[in-house]
Image (cartoon, rainbow, N blue to C red; front, side, top):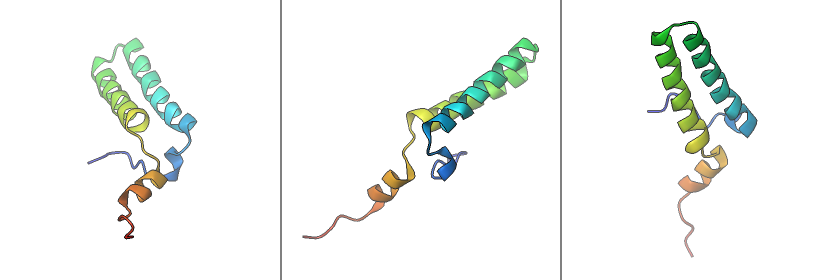
Length: 74
């Protein structure tokens, strides 16, 4: 089960995916500076998850549609 709908058109541009990950990393730093270890761990885990889903394993929606097409008969 994915928590982020990667087929949504919002995530298609690379700069938006990087911005989401950067925001999560920034929020983790804010929590660490504020001496809030519990929330730093939560936001750090979210940063790792978003980086994995949006940067490492991201497949554009058009690629998903093409992959799900049945092979053409000759």
